[in-house]
Image 1 (spheres, each protein chain N blue to C red):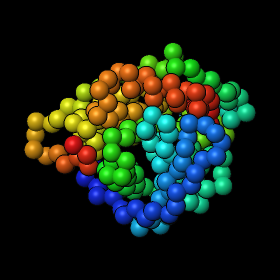
Image 2: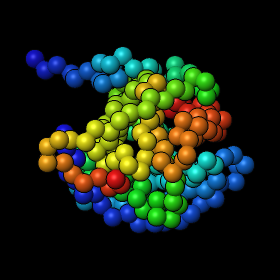
Image 3: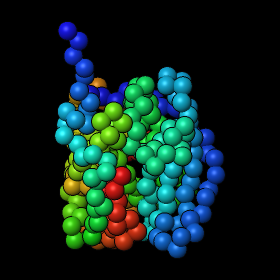
Length: 183
Length: 51
């Protein structure tokens, strides 16, 4: 599968500081609309200590749902939606040089059965990591995958010690989100 | 005879929402695998967003 979609234009909404005294310092909020699904999507870039962003997104109409990252809309346009999310990476690199990125493939909630996918190797994760390997090269970042937690890290090569940087970022995330795989 | 389609959560034996338990993680259990991004030898590939 070759990703050929171009994605859509992202609109910056606001910068929201995080005041919970954690290592999550602030969030940059963007939005875009898919003409194919007819829905607006909200994209969040959570900035943390260790100079790393986590990118998350959900359909705006699900913004009040506890399961907003886990719902299946089933209107298609996946490729454009994921390319749009990934297009945030070069934009953020311009303003935050040397930063790293991470994302999680959230567990899916199946409303019909009332059941939740396992947190290991989720279906979202399996798709996301295939996209990111095509959309993000290996000259700027070192790619790390965490199948056990459906997580992926792009460690910026500006770090002199990549292994040390990866451990520091992993430690920061486990301390900040010790219940990460929870739905 | 119409067969009702089995829900995905049932078909894949997912966990009922009420039985989902908190999962705590620590850095020692988080082991990343460094992967090499292979460049395709064919010309039919898109230019990456970031090299």
